[in-house]
Image (cartoon, rainbow, N blue to C red; front, side, top):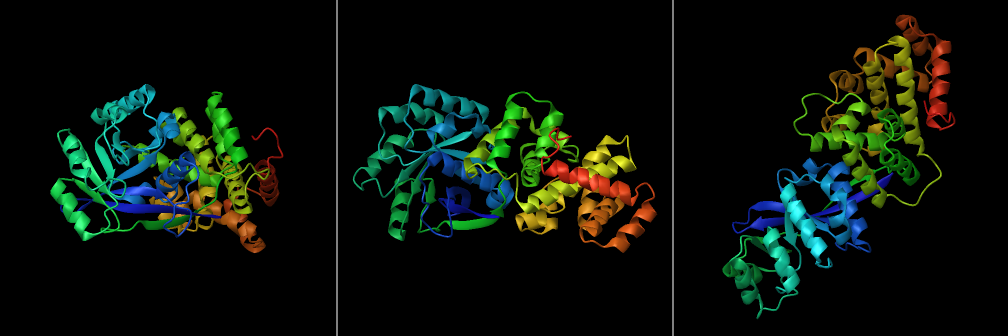
Length: 411
């Protein structure tokens, strides 16, 4: 289990009302970011805010400023971000080329808002971007008191907002108000709050394998089968579907629906982004808890096939129930809190939260079997009638072989 961190610093308007947060890379409960790779830091911020901690928990109804370097700016991965809730903050390290200007124009036409970071003077390259940006951030520590009024004056005629960054005290705050700044950020108002959570990363090898399937136009069923090996990734994808497809008219009950709603391109972008945040390639498929969850999901699917041979939707819901049933331990979060973050079919939700319905009964059976409660298993099998102990053991062995990747075909 890996602990994850995210910095969040408020951005206020002239009335000191909260209007946005800047989301910052953090590697622990310290003020020092320790950034050594801008692309990796930005990817970590996006993954942690968007999927791990939940964008709704991090931002609420506010907009989030996210640092973007040249690599991320030019990448399709940027399109993972919800355009209505983020401000793409272009780092001062970006070399402003014709290609960068064109890309910023594309993003604006797509509906994204842009901010220029750490502007200290209006150079010719910056002039090319000014018609495309919504916010210009001015770092007070890098700008001399003598040049600041002239800088503000040269920008005030443009239809954009000026943000005073690193406002350290009351005197600076009042001066910036007088100069006409629209937005304010700094220790005088609030220090960054560090949020934390836990994440069990899917292995890098697994992500590479999944990315290969997507990029090679594999059948949806093959992508679905590969995803089934990664319970934590499955959860994040379901939650992402709810973030990017706010107008869902149906509830998610299978991985096939996740892929269909999210789309191949979005799925590819998300996997690419996750690759930035994982550690070195590992020969182990997953940790023990993830393997147990994958085994449970597959076993529930196999038993569901015996119970209702021709009901494929039921089989898919059974798998999802099994694979999500251990996420409270995997993510160190209460299961009701996890279920609240994803739109699940009622049958799956009832099974997970109260062990009700046919899927709840199957899940209870598997839990009793895992706990070696022989009497309870025997009683439940007698009541179910459609399944014998021999069939259950055979299905369990098949599920274990599948989860261990020993069956080659990954049926």
